[in-house]
Image (cartoon, rainbow, N blue to C red; front, side, top):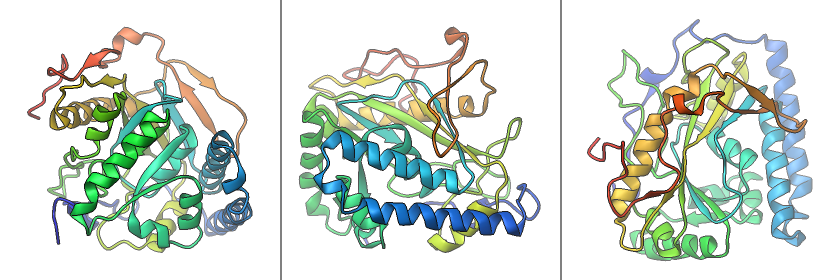
Length: 325
């Protein structure tokens, strides 16, 4: 196994909530969520033959509505902090769960970068292909330059591309019973595509919690030997599960920038935003009525939010970031 392409997470069963730690819904509510999810998947199946004939904007809108429908069927609330790009940007996010993909698609018009195995998943694979997902074969290191070139090509075409540079899922929250670091290092390969295309990098922090005033939860984490079904059962049982997507200010790499330093800068920005994802909002502005509750959270005092400068050049270390962390 090539560890460069298939990194291993230190997270495992010890990272998951113990009995009674997470508020749960009744068995009847769980059955209702499964039924609603089946309806969302059926809608996806009906959408599948239509996507290829739609213009790019139509495909993005269809994928966005479907992702929000899936999240809504599971009883998940989605929150957005910061400004997400609508064109020409590389989104670099931490990776906790299969729900990360749904959350990203629900808030940004992004093409996803996914492992080759996803192409074979029932319904999800065909929908991902029709939506323009770029697949990477992690078992063939020689395919990496071609994948980087495809991402750069999409960026040059003014598209938004979303990647998970950790390469695998982590729990997202350190626990006393576990020695995992909660997150992995950002692999630098895909950041080269942003440098080649002259595109900004927008760090995204994805976090989960189970209601106002509660700390983050690992209930949604997809770890170790978990099957999709086991993870789904855990998710549908949670009461008040919410996902927060926090967008940091964009990093603008110079032509001579190092992809490793760019990856470090993006990783630092994602880690810095972690605590903000659980801080109470001072002002909440509703977006549009959607199948899943979606709100845009805007701090009333922007100066109180630690953030990167909007126009950070990555040719040199960005101010305020510890690149050695």
